[in-house]
Length: 229
Image (cartoon, rainbow, N blue to C red; front, side):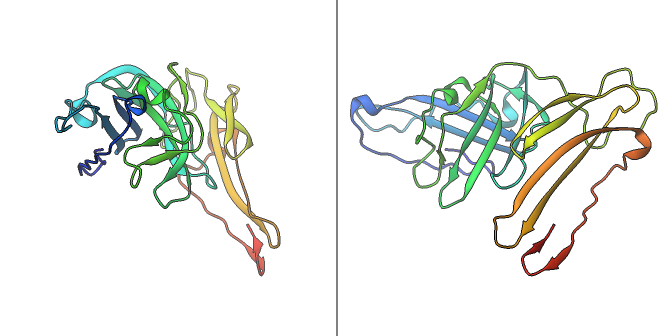
């Protein structure tokens, strides 16, 4: 397994022939966040790794995928879009945990082999890989490019702005904006009611250019022990 900082981790184990799943698994879930895993099976010493096709050496293909990574209790913004490279032709969402870590979501470009992994499988070595808590969610569609967070302010836009609307912090869908409200405003937060668990929420709204102040504004209020938002 090669980590994003270039570190190469090699592990070997003895398995029965039926437990041998060979393949090269590559996943990119951010501009500088990637994971590459090669599994080889043999009757003798497995010391030769196949040539890597990941990272900066791989050329862009025609596939575009939404990407994000984050804790399940925080928002994983699926509106960001990246160009896939090399043999990463599937858009994938992985739910699982890193070793000794909490629940995580990884979303981005992947090789089709990642889609064949099953629940409770580990992407990489058991003690340092990503443990899946559900079967990977894959599709091979090319989503439209969404407007970035620092778009130039204009009062006339030729293309329709696609915002989003959420039923909960993890489930959001596209929301086409009308011509007179052609900017997307995102709001997200956490509300704490003391005795119950904090509630995370997020949503998007179609607004006019004068209502949209680019950048990040954070508001916080604590009005009692364990009470705030």
